[in-house]
Length: 409
Image (cartoon, rainbow, N blue to C red; front, side):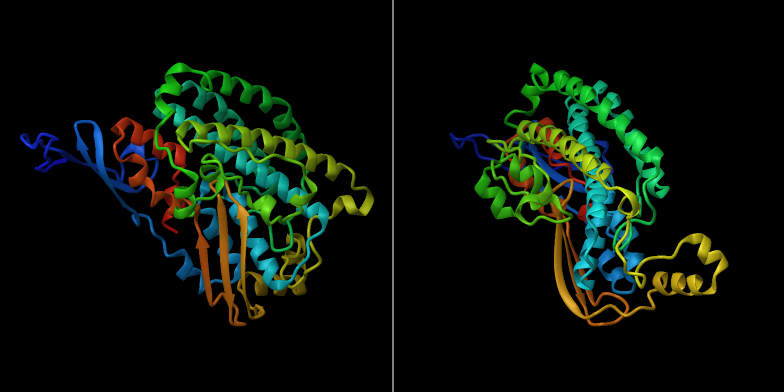
């Protein structure tokens, strides 16, 4: 912590006060990531804040210019790692838009299940961490066991848990196992009760309400001016959701509501994310019922018919020369991408996650830009915290769900 002299005239013009410059981050535990806020404090009240990003910048966009399509998927995992399957599938759907690939309905529904599970884990972490920063550790520990259950479902599908590298261009690497569906049924049965208890611990808790109501508010107009999307925009009263306004992966086949708030403060952001978890559970239930309606050969479909972009079965790679050749060509990017320019976005855990892909007909993207919602939210942090208490600034940071990996792509 550094102390600097700052001359501030009081209303009567007679007294000067000393303010404190606090270096909050880049490795402070309250920042929940590697980014820095240089905060000027008058006592415990924030006079100004200056954001610094770039501590874990990994040049993903530049790296992508030298990588074939499949080798870019692991890069997307490392943006918002709290909901990495959404990143993976957003990228694959961007590729499918450029390649003009139409996926079967069953693939769309399987993707919806995974993306909504990822949204739940993302919101679950954010809402419980707000509680931790308000002094309540029990709700966080209570819901983490169900994040683990979701990770077990991921593990059954792709073998990974946190950074999943899940799916393929056109669908999935393999069909979902019976074990994956059994674990999904367990989650759908048990998690609603846990979510009810989680809400009962916090939603009308006087201490939690006093800490979050009025912390970091933003109006709908200012949120739109900054480019907010996702839960943070909806908490300010704007019902924009990519799943509704630009449907993808057959989201138009599902019925769900868009929760909105009114004040755009930390409490509203908490309520919106909790309500979205209920909507996600409804969507998953609907998608699972639709999947059970597929019979015969249709029940085994998990990928579009695009052999030039779909990896052959591993057992064939080990025993057949043709499969080995195709595996090598796809992984090493020895197939030219058609020229074109596309933008595709999905409703990520934090808002509109977009991919702007430009191809000149080579084997790698000519240009790839990630629209990371966290990078946009963080620009408003100074405005959201000015005049608030330092403790409220921490709560505000938690409620925005700032993920350093997503800001510094």
